[in-house]
Image (tube, rainbow, N blue to C red; front, side, top):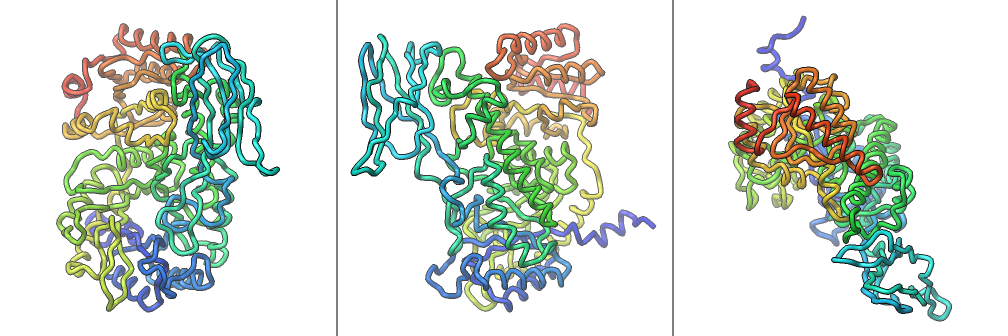
Length: 611
């Protein structure tokens, strides 16, 4: 017999209990303290742990366990058994700390950082140049083109890669030189593109876990990482011991390239990137934004296919699920989150008040809704107060409410710091101190019970959104030069926090949507689509929006109508189709135009849509 709501509230499902990140400094842990702390968590209503092993507090201590040493595997297996004994769950961050990498990652599978080395020359002349000791790294391209009004003229671009020669020192490869390049008349720019030899390493790892971060666009690099950092763990711990393997936020500093980009770009976009690579930093006349769009679109597809999806596939092979924080990626953010079994957002800073958190929460929950993920988790209470130890249970409870209102239905505390039972209290630098060494810990069980009830209630239901907001990701790709674009931050800056928060405060619940969702709009319950700060979109998306409107749904465009297609090939034709479709919708009354995305948009919503 089905339980009543009151019975559910009195006895919420154990699976919906809150979880916590569990910091293990240098893997300096012992079995007695592990058992003690798990007892503390269980009593406080915490239903699962996410172990993240990071830097040692005393680097020289012999008690620090070497990464992947026999003692390392032994203590993890013991912990998993103790966790399961108590009816709790264990999640694990692969490697040590974040992003994914380690000592086994060779340079060729690490995350490339490409930058230009430019020289201005005037012709007619014959030009030679010795790059030796003036730049360090692998040359991935070289072009020369005539400049006019600070733009490179596309018809003058030459690929000069074949003219670059290796320079030897006593028969050893030492550098690169350019010899006898004929420069035509006029002002020219030579640009050599380098994949630098200095690349990101894992941030704050434990002993023995240092090393390069992997190329997140390369499936071979991803598979190699999971085979080295993950499969041995499963072999020793057993399938099912780890419920979810966790990927923390993608803090990929400078990662902007992949070795397969030329082949993949041409295959996916239909033309060669090599002649036009300068557009990624400078301007190529009449082509800059289209080439940048095509490049970032390609990188997006590679990242989602070759990292996010590969991680989930590997987790399933190991009998586990994937839990992924996708913020930090340059890719289609909803697809990136949606590739995970459990998309996870994040909350940091003073969020013990409600405001829509686009960057770290609403995008994650929207992805969970549109890709039908039952659990949407949230790394919670990071930096809730600074200095540390000043956050209160009241602030934590209110912060949890703001997380729930943004659509998340699983709390992961940030977090619980491993400390010796009778030793000095330890605390992670960015974490709220939610563990047994806090003076108010004995009261946390009240919050734990509350979190369990709310999460259980939310997980039993289905999200219902009648309004959706289109993400102008194509414009961000087109307008940004080469870099490790943080798509979530760029979207919030473009849409504006005050605008999105204003919509929510008027009582309008909404999801963010992308092209994939609009292409299948009949599968969803949306009745109103809002477009703002959108100039570009694929022709197929414009056609889907027209179909959405013709079936009696409301389309609101704020500020301006979309007027451009996406990408370099057939640009004029695509621009005309997109522009014509939206002008027709406006003329036929299938679209309402708002003069701005603030007051005018809200007034139309109030007139036409019930909160």
